[in-house]
Length: 235
Length: 216
Ligand SMILES: Nc1ncnc2c1ncn2[C@@H]1O[C@H](COP(=O)(O)OP(=O)(O)O)[C@@H](O)[C@H]1O
Ligand SMILES: [Mg+2]
Image (cartoon, rainbow over all chains, first blue to last red; front, side, top):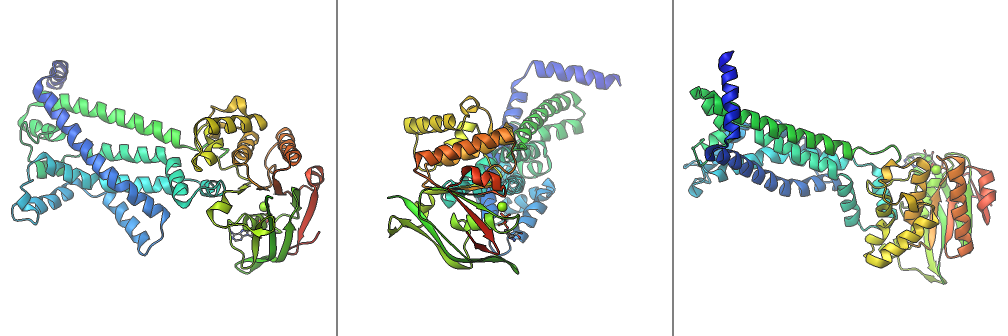
């Protein structure tokens, strides 16, 4: 019991005297997850729009696959990316394994189905009367689609935030493809895993608390957007 | 000359339910046409077909610029509009809802502001302009739907049961707007209602839809 308390008090003093190492770890986490999120959002948004507005063969199957991938364990994605990037793998010549780029690739794959699938759900959730209204007011088909996406904007933001929550919290994929190299590929979750292993609870706890705070902020934002996206009774 | 329309021999059925059968009418004079008939007789269907939102199985809807056939497609779609019984407002402020039709036509700045403000005033919504449209009462929402249609100065305005879901006061306001449109004389209004008394109050011409046809 006392060791836990001691751990916490040391963790807080660590947080107060933010050292460079801690700062670097946090910044790398944000950079890797932020970039992965950006890339996956840029790819997922057009896909979710196409899924929402176009009919094509196997569309339903495609959406099911996307939904399935939402729940894919990060370690499996880590393994997959590892095999791709390892020296004997198809992309081995690029020498990306154990670099932040490899981590970004893994987390992009991790975030993509979430952002795409939840954005698609947000677009599908827009009241069909919106399509009608835009059309009758003289909108071209493209303008109608943009109007529907705009109506889904809070749902889409919630999708992006959910994706961020997933990649910030995961450890399996980046541990495998990043290797947890100090000062280079070490991020918050991998540090916690390593330091706990070593018995250095203060640093692990300090980062754990910071991660918790980030997660709290993410959830508050999620809640705000979900509330804003709720339609009034008189649409 | 401005736009008028003729519905010629319209047939429409859903599955095995024949809703319209050889339905025709020429709306060649400006004014207020009110289409009445019992629930489910096909008023909304007829309106959607006339507003080019749905295709008939047979027959055609002809728009004429004076005596000439009007150019079709997007250009024509932008000269007419239909207000639905369900307001269908966007999740944005009242004034952005109202200026929507201008934005998608590339009209912005001063002209957009002036036209939006004047329609807001006409529909009695000036004091609500910055409020989110989804927080309005149903009567106000229906008026925003009207304002959003009026701002684009449609030559033919279809109103499907514009007062079906709102109270007496708002019904009065909307009927007043329709009557003022009549005085301005620039718009042909074609509206539906199942309320015969309302039909008599606002119409230049009351039409009855029965057995899939317009019979008077
Ligand atoms: N999209 C649709 N699919 C199937 N049936 C429809 C559809 N739209 C209308 N109907 C049917 O057509 C008939 C006429 O409907 P409607 O035009 O809405 O009548 P009204 O507006 O006069 O009450 C009704 O029986 C309705 O069920
Ligand atoms: Mg109807």
